[in-house]
Length: 149
Image (cartoon, rainbow, N blue to C red; front, side):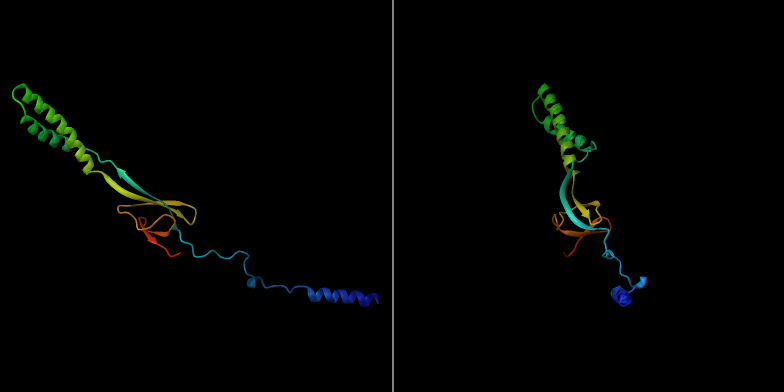
């Protein structure tokens, strides 16, 4: 009876044991990463930037000449000389300001939070058609392409 009972337990254990699996047929515990895009991400911010232009001196010289000519039209004697000197000074300051305004640079900086955890900024001269929070792909390092969600 003891032998029969031991044989029954041994047979039950053998039947319920899982069959050994072929290592080549085992699926990995973690799924392979989806096709990741190193330049894809979400727009974090869009900033408008305005850089002041640099005066080369040409605007000041041209403004000074025009101011001197205009100032010379006023007064006579010493008043004329003072008006000419004042015209040169005011014209030079105004000419320099105009030159700086003409040479100012404006652009947009779009900051993208990449899927791989990094951050990249792209500079564009025109206002981007995208908005913060939208998914984009950076193309050629300086262009943005909108991705479907």
